Image (cartoon, rainbow, N blue to C red; front, top):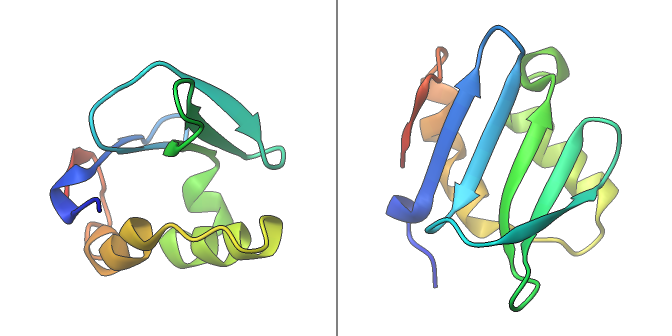
Amino acid sequence: MANRSDLKWDYDEASDILYLSFGDPVPAYGENLDDDIVLRHAIEDDAVVGLTVVGFRAMGGIDALIDRLNSLVQGLRIPLLTACAPELRANAEIGSGSG
């Protein structure tokens, strides 16, 4: 099971794009969930390894992202993202880092 140190993020403030990665980088492909969210899956085993969110702040931040993911993909659970929501929320100026 992934832990908080497995969550890494980078926020491009000028473009309002949030990049989230779960674990070490692996070859992956993207699945467009909608116009703003790309879910990244590992090529090897199809596991969810990250998200790219265009318009992260414009959509309302981490709480809005979690709500949107829940509405877009029934049954998709990203416990690590939910567990780290308070930490991401606390970093109003996200920058980059790890949980």
